[in-house]
Image (tube, rainbow, N blue to C red):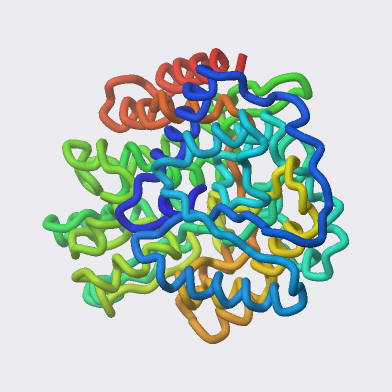
Length: 436
């Protein structure tokens, strides 16, 4: 998942929709589908780097410049040239590099939801052996490392991740004598009680279009989006366990919690904004939602805990979004590119990037160190420790997402337009068509 889509105000779905745009664009020109240039290992010259631009680039750029200075201090005959890539323009930018390896950088930042589509071009190098030999590699969170894999190969170093947890209004809970929910069932019960006592509030703000809030419900009930039989992916969202999880999530979009008239169309951004604006007693938000909360009516009135699972003491699996740093196979300076990736992705600069941009580190030691000094991070780190999950690693996922198959099913269930089985059978059939 891309950095920009993790920010308050970003649309998570846009990340995958743009991934689909890459393939539409690539369809107009011959994309490299085999080896994208043999590359080389020159030890001097200019290392070309692509990083995502930011609305406020200065803090990120300052950290990058510090890393460049450190990198060059021991490599006097090496320069580092950084090009800032607008997230909205990434599809065209990367497609150009895939079609013309000579125009590609040595290394680039990219979102983990784009990985499967990028991997099939053959443009990125397998970094599995490099990360295995990297002293800090053993500290990479295992579940986050999985988001850098496609077809059994590791195509990037996870630079940062984004995790969601349960935000709740401490003042409202205190006023009504409520305790934080310990299970997903209690989330529903608590939300219903709050709405009954305070009808001007959503018990919890969630939405039919907020897929990354729905997924933990699906996973916590033992369901999966799809399974790979070794040959192809097959949708499993219509299995009994998946149906149970999705139905329990859809129950939150109800008049006595979060009315469908408003909430059926809520995205993740709108769900978080409702809580930040003082219109909801709970929401499912990310570590990256902190700024929005602290700028809104909920400032100094909220706490966060891991989204609970189905049993007391359990944690619902969270979706692990984030960005990777990958090396192009056509790079003529592979060793230098890997060294710079490992410098940026090491503990020192992960900590600096957190201070500058609020990016949740992927190295366990850095996570624990930061959480010890910043209690806000603790529930997100705990969610990571409990285990995260990811969407199917296939280019077809971009198409599935752009077709709104999951949001449509959730909306149909929440509004009563279709029974859960009918809605999910239709979605599964459409997913399988995309997988084929």
